[in-house]
Image (tube, rainbow, N blue to C red):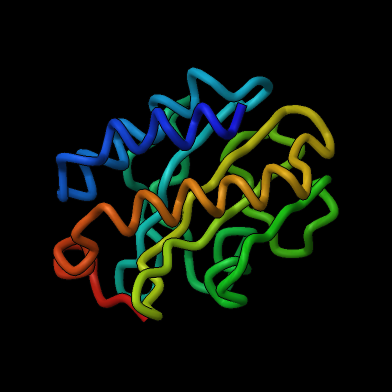
Length: 159
């Protein structure tokens, strides 16, 4: 599945530099291809919070306050965070009461972090090590194809 996704995402972003445009197509495509995913979207750094960006799924939390939840854990660690059971995660932020597992991938380019890609599932332990590795590759493809400087200016300072 991921080999095809890599090729398909490449074809979606190859001629476009605008991050919002690329991110919108990215999440729409992943949401249509990944089984058992209830929500997928971006949260982008904006001062001391993460602000919702392009996503697919039910309406979600608009702003995630600093150092709370799986998304901020990924920002602070600057790495993929995969949580098999979000109800056991100490600072979990409930945006969908039915979500049981979550994986978050940071958006990093040239050493700066701009936000995260967040995926939720209603199933426990939905996301695997293979998902983590391949989602990291897909996110890297997206950020390398996109003008992240512009998104940092719009949403706030990357770090």
